[in-house]
Image 1 (cartoon, rainbow, N blue to C red):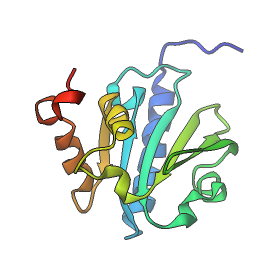
Image 2 (cartoon, rainbow, N blue to C red):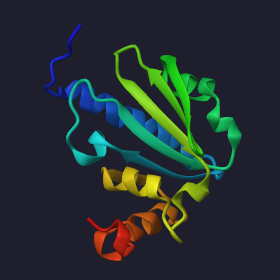
Image 3 (tube, rainbow, N blue to C red):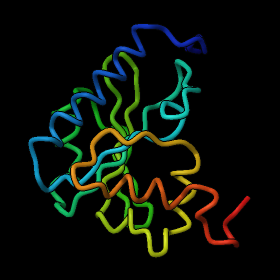
Length: 154
C-alpha cells in the first residue's frame, strides 16, 4: 500500500497529539531533562509517509524499555536499535504513523564540544518542545552556524 504523499489534517493532528502526550509525560517526571522533535516534522517538510522523530533526554534507563512507549502512545514496537548513546524505539500506531523515540542521556546535548552526530541531528531540523533547565536551548544556540567550530561550518 502506497500512502498519498500529501499530508492530511488528521495526520498533523495525530502528530501534535503524540508530541503533546510525550511532553505531558515528560513534564510530570523530573528525570526527563528535555524533549525535542527532529527531522521532517521539525523542518515542516513531513509527508504522509514520514515518521515523527522525538529525542528524549534522561538518565533513567526505564525510558529505554519499549513497553513504556507502546503503553503511552499505543501501537506496537516495530524496531529498536542502538546509535551510540541513543537507543531508538520505533512504535507503529494503529493509524500507521511510526513514532521513533530516541532515548539518550543528557550528555548527548553537551555543548563543549557538541558531538558531530548530535550536530547532524540538530542541523537536519529540530524543535525544542520541553526544556525545563535550558539544556536544549544551549545546544540549539551552540549549533548555530556562526558559533560552530571552523571545521564544522558549511
